[in-house]
Amino acid sequence: MTDSTPLDGVDLVLADLDGVVYRGPDAIPFAVDSLNTAAETIRVGYLTNNASRTAASVAEHLTGLGLSVKAEDVVTSPQAAMRVLKELVPAGSTILVVGGDGLTDELEKAGFGVTRSALDKPAAVIQGFAPDVGWVHLAEAAFALNVSLEVQIPWVATNTDWTIPQARGTAPGNGTLVSAVHTAVGRLPVVAGKPEVPMFELASERFSAEHPLVIGDRLDTDILGANRAGFASVHVLTGIDQPKQLLAAAEDQRPTFIVEDLRQLHEPYPATIETKRGESVVITVGDCVLVRTAETIVVEQQGSAINRLRAGTATIWNSGYTIYALRVPPELYS
Image (tube, rainbow, N blue to C red):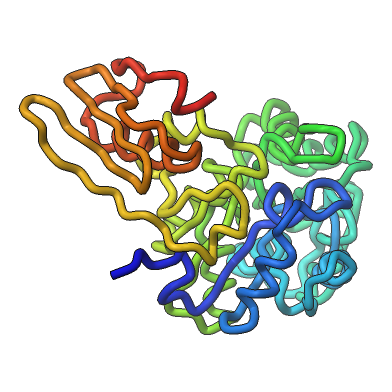
């Protein structure tokens, strides 16, 4: 009997973009070929918290990288925000926008009016990332949200990612901009994108999926959101969160699978085998063997780096200890 692959039994793949498919303008090695292969037998959709672009422009970018993508294959945080906004304000309301074309395009499609000024007495504020968002835009949001202490208008954020991967490194994300407004107005927005459930519900409904698989590079958005929605997940090590973050992951941020790159979507995924040896617990994953005795973890058989990480996460997550109480060998994360 062979081990199954992460794609077995899946009827929809939902791939994050930044850190999974591309970094900056360039495709991540092996991502395009691996997703194209998956798309031969499984529906593939794409999730992005980045609100600065339209679904059509994202699809064009992905197609340029070698994927076959239509606008309807892309689920954006502005689309999820429309789902939320429709429950908070009347149809056709005027909405103050902090963000770019990705937001205004979806607002207009949904029949809302768009303004950039609090003087227009908007029914709500919607905020998403755009690289040209500055103080003047954040100030207008604060003016609108502070206009009345008795009647507070809704505030919807597409997402609150603290960081966004770029070709030159990691940059501040929408969460930092939302935090600036929060500091000024003293309250928090309703969030529509990952890790909140509306975005995942929208995706599963659009593609009529029963067994989706989310692929992401961030534990606090992609994996947490998948877990909240009840979806299986793959964490890929080509983006933000790396072995140290995985080993220390909170219970609600632990992925179903861990891969080095997307080629491993198509490879047998080794089972985690736990046995007892006296007072010790032995964890075997593929060619790696770890032994935990009380608070001490020892690498008995090195194996591959990815299997050491898989075994390390299983050992720590199932130990009943917090990671800070354990002696963790550096081979698991270095």
